[in-house]
View (cartoon, rainbow, N blue to C red):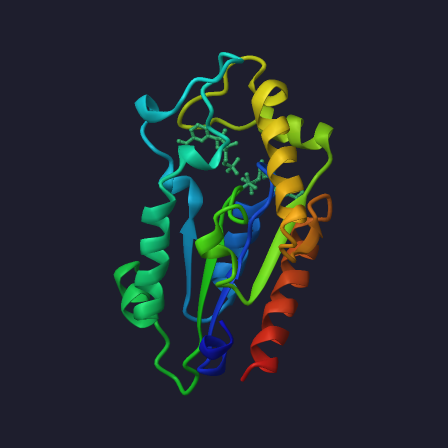
Length: 202
Ligand SMILES: Nc1ncnc2c1ncn2[C@@H]1O[C@H](COP(=O)(O)OP(=O)(O)O)[C@@H](O)[C@H]1O
Ligand SMILES: O=C(O)c1ccc[n+]([C@@H]2O[C@H](COP(=O)([O-])O)[C@@H](O)[C@H]2O)c1
């Protein structure tokens, strides 16, 4: 990662628990950072018929095996091999000024449990909100596959806790962000942090 930053290329991640506010934050950052691309982990869910059903009767969406992480890694590698080409192919307006900074944001709810990606990043963020807030926000969402009754308490929340415990046990260092802060406050906090990180490595 350090070598990439030294050439003005940065990667960062905006993960969190479900409904922590990562998509909202990512969308704001995308508008403000130069040559910035995003890869959403949600785009790598396997088809429904490949999702295992647990002993609890729920489809196990919130486990790493429900995601095609190899495909996600290949997409990240495509960006790494040519950020400029990747940006153009994804409709990002590449600025042809003196700065050769390119930024990739990975956005997802289970990013720190997949080893091949863990060490690739210059900044790792983790948005958290309390249980009640998370459950309430989730109840207002419509996913491609709607949540069956009881999924949040029976599967989503326990898996979130399990993966977070594992991440901490594995010593993955993250910057925790309080998802209860306003959208604006979070945006400014992270924007400043990324800009400082770019300056420190330029
Ligand atoms: N800082 C915030 N404060 C209050 N509500 C928020 C905040 N950020 C996002 N939300 C709301 O929470 C819900 C989930 O946000 P979203 O960004 O989609 O979360 P995620 O991508 O982490 O699942 C949306 O209704 C969104 O408008
Ligand atoms: O996007 C999908 O196809 C999809 C299908 C089934 C479930 N999901 C849910 O998407 C959640 C992660 O997305 P997010 O935006 O809430 O972080 C995760 O908790 C899953 O339960 C998502």
